[in-house]
Image (cartoon, rainbow, N blue to C red):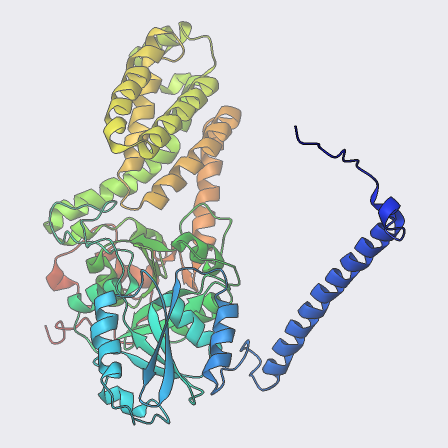
Length: 548
């Protein structure tokens, strides 16, 4: 049996006298200080390097690209650090090393290979490059931009361009090779019509502008591009008719958009809240649409379209109360039918706001104004209800709002079932339970239907917001409260301005009576010889109507 030597565990300090615990802690502390000092020194060197590079750069540029491709690659690595979707393709062009930078998923691989890489790789080995001028005849790409602006290059790369850097050239060649998935052109979801165009904008800015161009081949239709969002760099297009827009309107819109200083812009509401004159008003002061035909008609009235990239809704400004109540189908149906429909919408506006308030005022304060038979019927129904009229109306408003939100938010396959349940609850159950009377259920349903007749969804929600204050005023002051509410609403409408234009002024301005031909009613097209006077276009006569 082998002899195993006994092994004993001893302290390190017993073998090495200088290896004490205190000395080890001191050494660790010194090492930690050295590491922290090295990190601080590295940060200071990086900051110093960035400052040195900014010396020659303009004030708005983070740095300048140089003729050294290796240095440019290091700058790009810093800018696109932790961006794994940014790809680099290194190769040679003649005697020079080259680099292409692009974002995966936003560039078409076939277009990159066939239209960019293939022509460049076929150049002779002794080919010399001093600038990108000769590449304009070599590359079969629709858009080529030569730039030395770091900010512009970074923005375009993130927008879907491929950036070409060549050793010995301080500039960059931006090549359009965009190809990413987008929603196809479909039918309108919120502005459906029976007669007329059935196409709607999608979220792609280029497609939206192209659809507008397809509807009007007019060289006076101008497009001005802007970028907003300090971080998102969202693209915005201002579309207008140069010979029709009111002088100074375009400049005012552009100034307001340029004053938007936010990190990101993801919807038209982000833009609208910054550019409208009265952000606290419940009424929409811009008109949102998803229909190209409506945009074109508005452009030829002297209005401006604000098109935001990645959003399918387009904002139209200025906006008036009468324009909010107009629909695209008004110009596809006979004049008599359109006029009746418009009058119905104006009447529905009052019904959607004041009908529940009238019920509360008559039942609570003025029952003598009701016909005798109706007053007796209402009194009998009220005897079975334990709540006052105000509480009944408020309860029904809350119930209707919950029902509307549930139908809108639920998936389409489930919303039908929710509609059936809501109809049973609102139509039958609440009456049988004695919570409200049947007449109030009928009035609440009529009120909801009246708000649904509005062509613009944002205006419909405004009516729902105004309904509750009028109910409160009617419960406190009766018909006097309704009259006071009406005065406040009308006064507020007349005081609103949309880019200098009166929101509801042409309804009460006798100098604009000619605009009434296409406001409350619509006269035949043969009589609509002039454009709306309120917008103050440069050319008052409609094209094709002169001399008629």
